[in-house]
Length: 105
Image (cartoon, rainbow, N blue to C red):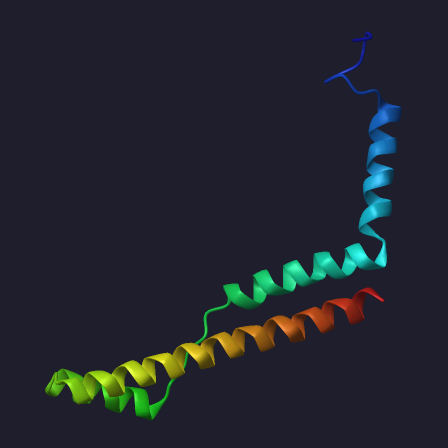
């Protein structure tokens, strides 16, 4: 290591490395990958509240009388709720992806 040099890289090497990184991240395919990852992360990090009367009714019926019919209805409504949540999250991620790429262009 030369005097005044830290961590084994000179200032020129650091500048060159950061320039290469900026060049790679500013290319259109890399920009789309980065915004897709960010949009998916944000889209799936936001909690989704699903308020469906059918699900509430199925829960109430199952708590009053836990039998196989009510359990089957509750299982079906729970699966429907999960589908609604995943669809909502995917739509939010898609909207965020479009908005972020429209803002970067």
